[in-house]
Image: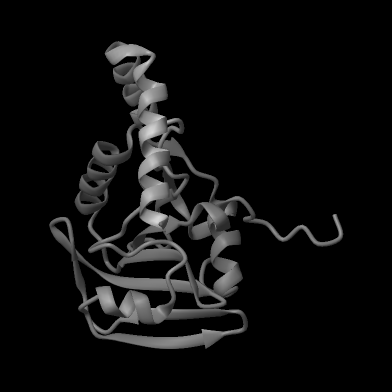
Length: 199
């Protein structure tokens, strides 16, 4: 009985639509196939598929390097036990999680040569376009949330930044006379860099 009712319903719909003719049916099918929403830009992917908001276990599933973990207040940090390959160079890799959600990532190049810094500037420009000057105070404010004694403002130099399609901010900067870093900041964290309580 149910099958007969369903068949009759389909038959009625087809007869109603056929009254519009073959051209009408074709137009109706084409209109229903057109997407109505513009797809969002591709989300930022780091290394082999790591994405913002992943927890530490999810990141470990993607990251093949052995990692060490440390916790500090609402933040936890996971860093590579050895150097990882970045372009033509090697660096320390650091993942920073707030309440077990990935918010920042850094490559640190201890004793990085000026030629490596210049090469990586060009490599980042090839990915994200022309660089703009970054404010060292913003970089310090971001890192202070994780470890307040990590950077000294007077040592943050040659700071540049780029913005990826999804809003990820990429910073390249020296944090001492010979050490530099590339830091990736999630759009969620980048929108609230400063502490604003009581302002």
